[in-house]
Image 1 (tube, rainbow, N blue to C red):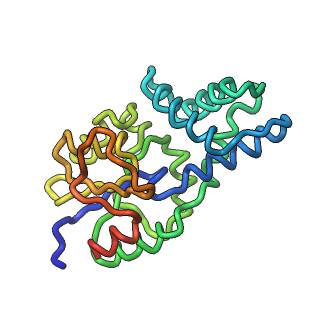
Image 2: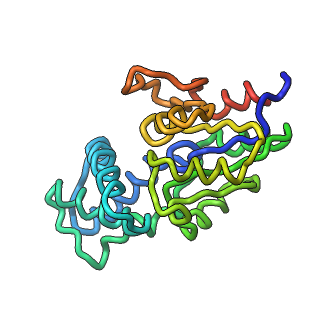
Length: 221
């Protein structure tokens, strides 16, 4: 297949990294210290509700977002999380692991000649801890700390567009809310990595849809 793109960017947590497993493990381990047992599905649902609310408030670092989100999730379940341990979620992030297909897909894309990038709602130092899990180097990193905003705000995409220039660009992401909707609004080609086979919440669609990163690599490489 003739390459129709030069640059492929990815959301990181949820697309490249198995962040739900990382979040669930962090909550399970920290709550157990206080003798509290939390259901995984309930924790993830509460996190999905609360984190976007925290991000939409006044800008704070992602470490602060994770800490405040953990506080609010704990309160929802009546878990008396102490302030001294409220940073457990941010502290755990560098240990979150990639999906099993992530590194092989990235290597295939890199070997095929694509330049690779990450657009992530994270701080630079937290992303640095994550980068050690990847077997490729990225040509572009755009973080929330750099643009002082969180997707689905457009600043990540506008910064990436400025840095990528005229090269042909595809963005790939798992979150329809954080990535597909703003990319479509800006006219950026977007591939939805729909691991859970979810329905588009707005009834729309991405330019392409795949179940896994391996499927995306099959198409591109």
